[in-house]
Length: 166
Image (cartoon, rainbow, N blue to C red; front, side, top):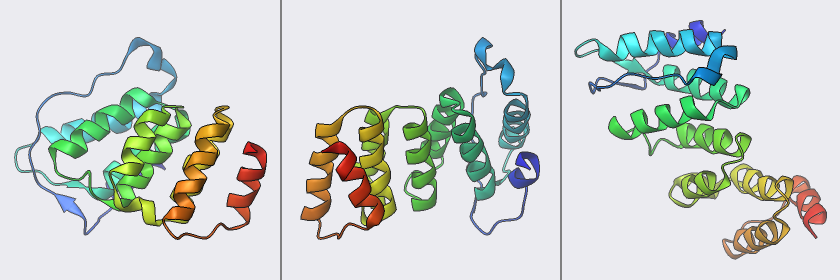
């Protein structure tokens, strides 16, 4: 599934060349499909004037998130910044999910605060729930206050999270 997703046609492409190689730490031995996906991505990225499809970033970020592979996600995030893709709201949401899944809430909060995804109740719920799961009830409640100050209204999921935090 991952490999097919990396090369599906997409109207959201970039042709900005990039430099450097993706590196895998020794502990990534259980990530064979992910390694192969990154190898194909890297090969494509190193070709002069090649366009890397939006779907390639999406597929790799989703798989990094699914496997909790922070190292690969950080590399993709860096590559997205180099190529000017960090402001894409769909990719921002994937980065938010990755950082939450890997319990890097300070990175998740930076993504959340610096992007347009703050208008999505799903993103707010994700951040509030992440704080709750990490035992940071005060931060969850503080974030809920911010949520309300932005004029958003809680749904059932928001309320169930807040009850757990209180």
